Picture 1 (cartoon, one colour):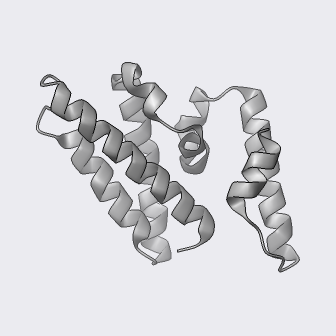
Picture 2 (cartoon, rainbow, N blue to C red):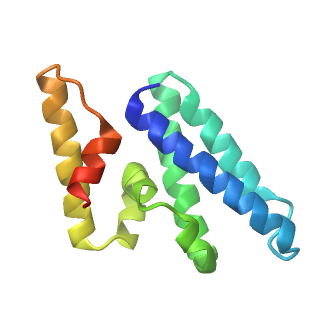
Length: 131
């Protein structure tokens, strides 16, 4: 698993922990535990190294995140902004243009480093761009 993917999987794990806390305190939220189960399945599918599985997981992540934000707007603050960019697609509708521009700069810096075979620290580069 590359550094960027590991970073985003960790954000999803943190989200799962937050949602589990909400679930135990809110009986209405605990409808068959499907939100948390789907998130767990998504995390596991992202860990699969096969390219086909990864592409499918990204698409599933887009759909899950969009549904989650649409049906649970009160829980939107629990979603790290990086996840919206990572999954892309309809998730980008939840981001302002200036934020999208910053993430594009981050992706461009990562692509440039890859072309030069230079090391790239996603977390440090993100901090520098979003300061």
